[in-house]
Length: 138
Image (cartoon, rainbow, N blue to C red; front, side, top):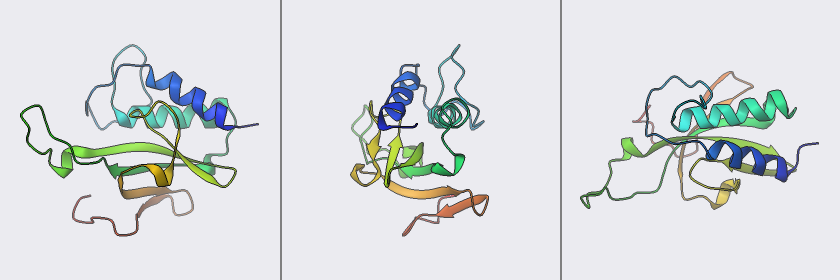
């Protein structure tokens, strides 16, 4: 049976690996022999929960978002396109959790300060726009 503890253990396990900013856009699960980026973290967590823990794949969705605005080391605001991020959403017992390499624990979807952009739809086998998404960025 999948519980919040299962999600927490998965998130903690993969977040322990070294992170590197946008190495490639290959979307393959994290390779534990090297550092990797958010795409690999999200897909590795999805693979683990579905293939190892038995969570139905339809209970998971990849989600693209923009993280909250922040300044670089020179004090300049980081442009929106450089704040693009991929996370894993998991629906469990009526709550959608976000498994994210930026947070140690799975977070409730509504509590994150992200601007949601696109979600993977298993039904359509395609990306869906988030409500109010900035469609100029794809």
